[in-house]
Length: 129
Image 1: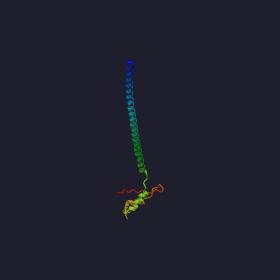
Image 2 (image 1 turned 90 degrees about the vertical axis):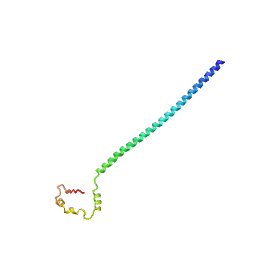
Image 3 (image 1 turned 135 degrees about the horizontal axis):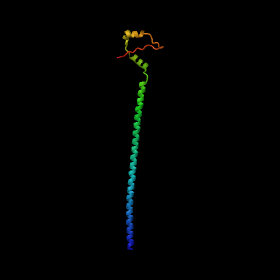
Image 4 (image 1 turned 45 degrees about the vertical axis):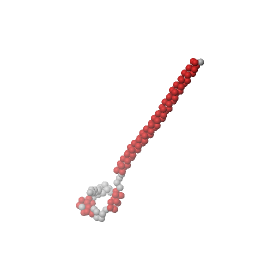
């Protein structure tokens, strides 16, 4: 009988030890799950930030490229002489450039025969100041 009581106490002690050990394992497991969850959240956040930065970089690169293309297209676009001519005409003062018609170099240019290339006439280049 005494040995039965001792055996029961040993069984109870062992069960209590196992329960305590199981509780510790449960606590450690819950802590590990929480840490894994936190790491997953951090990883998702880092992936999102990386994706955002990549998209921003691509927008910048693409934006710079598109902007450069537009600048080149504007630069290569033919001048709108008609618009510029009409604007200059509206801003012109009376008798502006009248002196030119009395210049010998202008008269020589004006009286020169046309070039033999069809309807193409001579070109007079005047550098303004």
